[in-house]
Image (cartoon, rainbow over all chains, first blue to last red; front, side, top):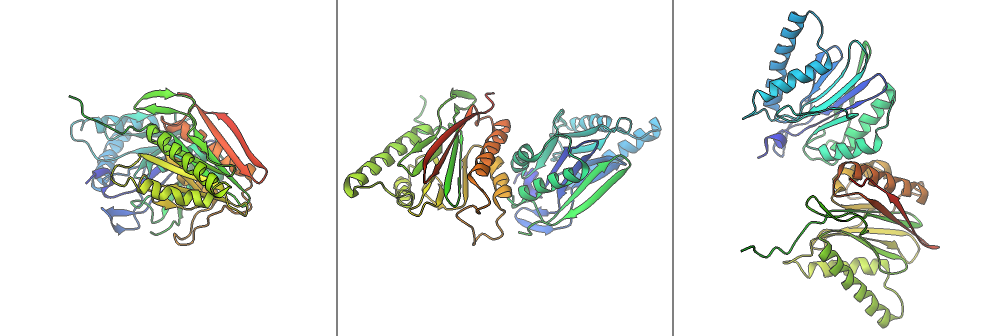
Length: 205
Length: 219
């Protein structure tokens, strides 16, 4: 069985006007069996920095713990909060350390630069090959659906409320076409000094 | 010794929307094999009668053979009955045509779009061995996974699988449907390497057929 789709789940992030949003579904599966419906895959790594980790759940949790450790160490030695692009570099190096036998995850990062408030969004593969310069990032078992929806629904300079609506429609309609994802979704909208977290309902089948 | 390999996948995407008094069908025009582009202008869309259009992704050799066969069947029908086959009849005919080759199938992803006798839109899609589906919109081909959720979102998310409309609601005018399919193909061409170059849209109403073309990405 494919470790990337064993537990199921999706994550999507997109840029807005001085804001970013990141969302994930709530399903936790074991093959075709659903074992949990309260399992968001987005983790807080800083005040305006979030990491989405769909993929093999055991690996996701391991990576979050190990990465949080590195982030703490970084912030103690640098005496400042980590910036999104440094966090991306850290994750890339961390993943490539396991070049031959990596973690079965598909990371998505969303954050705001603490100095410039510039939105930051990126996705990478399990070995840390990150893609930059895209206004949205998708990962997980409904990757193609998410990509098609983002491409059709996203537009530049969305305000926080419109960004929330857009990303919600994207994740809602993508997981409706994926048996391995769904069971509700969590959406974080990140603005300067403010993060709004909302839970949205989806079909439960 | 290379062995006989009768199939290829030539990519491409086709889609259709059935309205209350129109039907809209679209196809991109790229023909590819692997990472090679064979043609930038081969729209995979074939009118079979005044009110019925066939469009098909998959292996182009099989597509051409299938179209030829359907055209022959349409011609024979006209000679026998003195009128063209209805859209419903053509949709019914495609099933045994495909299933007749159950164990050496045409490698095709066909859709049929047309008006019924009352002038309402009808669309159907089939798998390579002829299983039909009748919905208010259909999409087949290399970008179907990208576009299907978008059309579902815009035309009306289905609440149950047993109560699916076969025509889009009256609010979806022909103009809006054209915009939707155009946007769908623009989005598909952005991310699917097998879809691109141009999109051909055919709108069929009681007044007749109108064909338009739009440019897509060429990379």
